[in-house]
Image 1 (cartoon, rainbow, N blue to C red):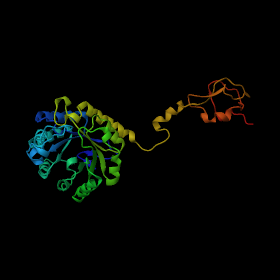
Image 2: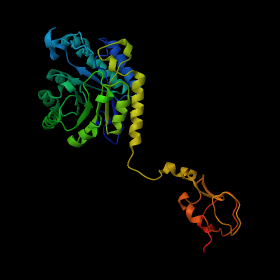
Image 3: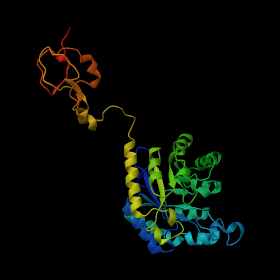
Length: 349
């Protein structure tokens, strides 16, 4: 499948998405700086989120609308205030999209309701992302699928039955190209709670491209996911974590993202195929294996023994496994120290 000008699949390098989310800290100038920084890292795409506080929740500051869990990264905020702080103003989308195009970045977004889909269609997005918290919103899935564009769906919290329903709905709605991203919806996530062995299972079950939306710290989890078949990597991105912001805690800085791009490419390059024996590049190294050599001058008729025959480097003689066949046998001619052992040195009896 293809997104923008990038081919997605096992025969292509991993598609790396830098997620801006709310790391613009309500500054368009910072948002555009994030775009430029992402482009310099070698990331292939930049992703936004398209919603308003009013399309997400109600302006209430009590009960279930207030985050009081002491272990929650956003504790002490109402849902409405959090989304008000984190949302990307819709009027910023066009300049952000335009800057991405200028810099060769593919730009797309996560819509959180049907009005966001209609808005993004006007911007000619090449694909859509469905967030983990929306992966069971079947009306939204149908709306996005009807565009016919590729869908990238995070699987966070979804049961297998729910994912099956989501994928079936997307395909029935007109979406041919689906990418499922293994995701753990905790912020930050821990490697122990990421379970990336699910990635090949997702590919097998749903016959689609797979990847990871990674909220863990660092790049290790995402790079490891490539070895398990991930063809898409999504990580949150910021200029500096020290600048703060709703998602800064689990976001990568530019140097880390550059490392992710480079190391995920190396991981993909290393996959290769099932292969045994020396590669073409390894053939010259065969000469440095151990092999059997005469280690003392010998005269015709002398007997091979541990004092005059040993396995050493280089590897131009017979393999060490033939040592026992020569011990106690006589040499057929004079031989100098440093001669590789060969069958023509053995005296027939």
